[in-house]
Length: 488
Image 1 (cartoon, rainbow, N blue to C red):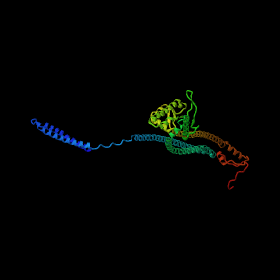
Image 2 (spheres, one colour):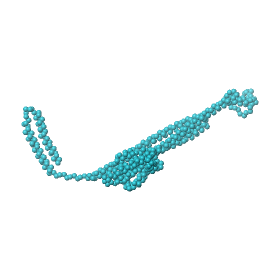
Image 3 (cartoon, rainbow, N blue to C red):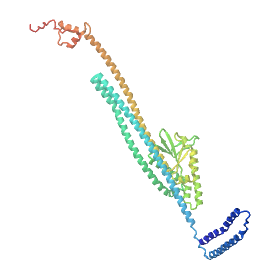
Image 4 (tube, one colour):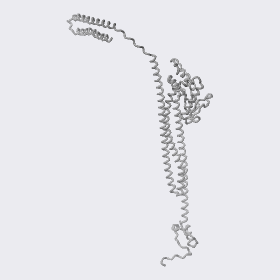
């Protein structure tokens, strides 16, 4: 066959030669003078053309004869299209599962990064508070020491001992509180580091658990598909178990089956109410869509699977509408949405993957869809918020105590000022009394010394310094002979 094609190509080139000769001769005829007619070349052109055509026809006949003698090729086997379609379906299913797991891992990593940023911000905030308290302590210590030195210098040894004791008594609680705060900050930093490590381990465990739960989802669906009450109880049990594993305590950070009255007077009983810092609440309600999901998983044909898938998505949308009509978020002050918890990862993923508008429609009704993985991360975040809130409460208590200590110190300084004023008045009174003793004519020292000199019986003598200051000469009593001078 290839030889036939090659021969045809050569023949086409031969066939083109007359046409080329015609074009060449046409150009030559146009260039020839008008007095020389071109009719003399026509006989040569016709003979040559007929020769070429005869050769071409002969070669074509030979090639046609050879082609008819060659046997026809055997038909190729038909491909197994059913097996190919089955393998493509399995490949697409594995690809979708891989993409779903990749999205979940990306969300988990994003949550870890967000928690790392929050922990870093809290650590920096507490470091700044500790530095401010340390600076305040140093300032207070310097002020206390300066005041103590001034008081000791003014009031003597007794006042020095008393002031030092008072200052030590006042500074001791502050030192103890600062030491406890420093110890607590260090312990909190170590705990946060440990919690971060635990969180990373938890994400890995959750990843492994997700694989295990995916394999067990169909078995669990078969066990629960026929009993709606058992499905609801199972969903509430899974919900409470996740909250406890996240570190929340029933009766403290969350309560179950809390009864409230709605705006229309209807009694409402949400599955779980989670308490948040600042007296806020978050409502979580468990919804199990298992019957249609089980039919979809166990469907034998594509039509059965498509019908069951539509029923499963419709069931999830029905749960969203009924939960939105109850308006749990309006019962409490807090977040303006309600978490709808779907205990089966596979059921939630199947509905969300095949209905891209499902999550958006739920959000417009103030409903957020949560799976065990996303709920665990959210509740761990709530637990960390409570830890930070308690740490902030301790910092506020220390700040309040520091304020009380400052007020107490201000009162102590006021008392010191009063003591100084009293000491000043006492010194003034002392100086006035001393003047009466030694100043002026007829002062008490001179009069007392005059009485002695006049013969009053005494056993002691006034000090020479007092006599000198009063301007009194030391003389013997009147009944004593004057002392003899030296040499007489």
